[in-house]
Amino acid sequence: MATHMITGAGSGIGAAVARRLHERGDDLVLLARDAGRAKELAAAHPGARTLVGDLANADRLSWAFSHQTLPDRLDSLLHIAGVVDLGRVGDLTTKAWRSQLEVNLIAPAELTRLLLPQLRVSQGHVVFVNSGAGLNAHAEWSAYAASKHGLKALADSLRQEEHGSGVRVTSVYPGRTASPMQAKVHQQEGKEYDASRWIDPESVATAILTAIDLPRDAEINDLSVRPGR
Image 1 (cartoon, rainbow, N blue to C red):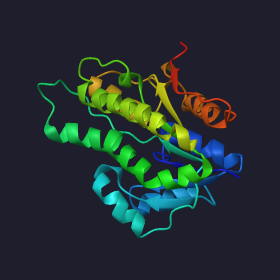
Image 2: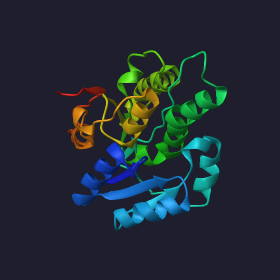
Image 3: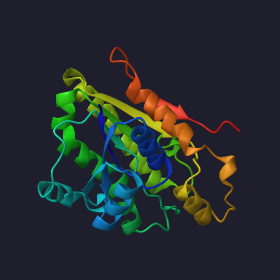
Image 4: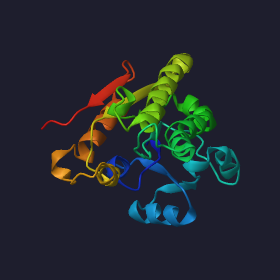
């Protein structure tokens, strides 16, 4: 039975992936930002384990994990959590830059560093759920896109570094996906939100599961998922 650690399992793509893996009987380790959130995730996925660690404070992840029991091995580490704060370069504060870089880039790097020993044991898989903004930046998306461009660089470097240990690395680039984050983006853009216009999180979950379920003779490096309508 495979063991998967998931960030962002509380909503959107992360919730869809967690549900699919839970339904098929895999073991889940769900990262929560605090004890209250951990309780909610455990209730939603009976039998799943939880770890508490705040991605907004990556410097404290090592300390937080030292007081908890990590799995002995991991078959996949799925980085799905993310934050977005739109704004023009001339208006964005350093706080907005730091918060997005911390959660979207620095925390995934630190989390991967801390869990690489377990991933190497199982010749596991690291999946970074990136964004179309990780490939092309547009007006008012500078900080978010920068964090996601950095995440692509992290994934590309990690893939080359860990090839010899058998750890696979995949970047998934979803287009706009119906989720609470997308609702927030529309609010920031001053636009009406219609979830039916965008990708269903289940479709992105299918792409992620395809990558991690691929036989060992192959590896999906980069996978773009775009709206079909």
